[in-house]
Image (cartoon, rainbow, N blue to C red; front, side, top):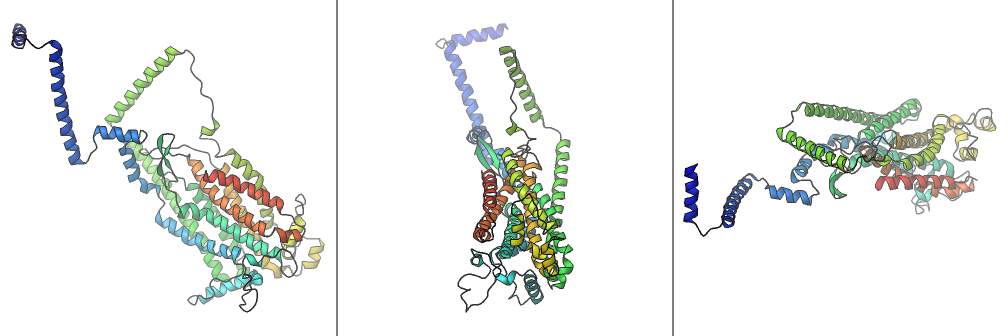
Length: 507
């Protein structure tokens, strides 16, 4: 101790011109030089190892709304998990694409054979021609280049629709076939649109924070679509298999066998990928639970707990009564995706499904509580292929009803596709809840909740299907009016549902 005091006194004697403040400033300069030298060494090491400096991390995190480059790079590296498997996309494109092309033909080129010039498979071309003859779809297809029908676009297209109904043009039968094609287009588009044209999650700025916007395969946004697709494909396959004997007698067995096979293969692929995704999710959850937490994460949690306890003490000291948070149904993860969409679908699709179930399982049955339902059945030809028992129509058309089996097939096909579309809409509004916004552990949260993401994909496709239904109903409105059938209520209800689903699906 005496030696140290002597040394201090000696230093003061050696530097008598330096005051205490100047000495402290000199010490600070020395420490700053040492810190700058250490920062230079660290920056050199980071440049060699391609690691960002702490200042760069803070600046990029501030620019990215509090999310650093590590989170963004990890989310981009794991973006492969968000994409749909390529075999699933290809199988959906092939199987549903086949039905989509045939449905487009029925809607906008009724009666036109697509495989007529296919020399490699003459049996398949003949089967398609036999199916068109069985359903009497070529009644409105005029393939005569020398006549005026060619220039009037009467090859089963929209030009074949007349503004009046007569026994010769049979606008009611054409209405059934074109509506069946439009309904099938809407159903198969609900599978093709979200799967083939996937909107993968991408970072977007929302409320000053980086969030993910899009649908993810890894998280499970596509599980409802695959589940509904499995059920729908099984129904389509069962529809054709039940009528296989009649279609075999008509000579359309090869084409029908391909349609049944495509439906079952797509359903099988959907089920396999759905099970594999859920099994992989369970494995990853078990691995994450078994992994020990790092020391850095534990220290971070302890610091957060201490900070939270200090905030609690401060808030308790400032106010004795705790602030009660009001319940917000919009933020409840257990609520339905949209109340307005639910009410709209229940009002409109319930009526559509009721009439469609009647056409599918009880064709020709008159629903007395529906205005002018008998006129609708007479206009669409239901009394010819399925006359009600103990009626005048049964006495007149009972013996001839087996000759109109093709008309009955198209009427039931229309009912089936309308029912499947209504099932998709019912499921999108009440079959699952909103859910949470969590993506991966390293990714920012999603903009929409999981249930809302799945519902929006369905609402977009169903809004497109309703638009096609609305367009076709408007095209046949003059012909139906000439048959004392007013379609204005049909147009208004379908347009109302289309607008609501489009608003909540796209915005």
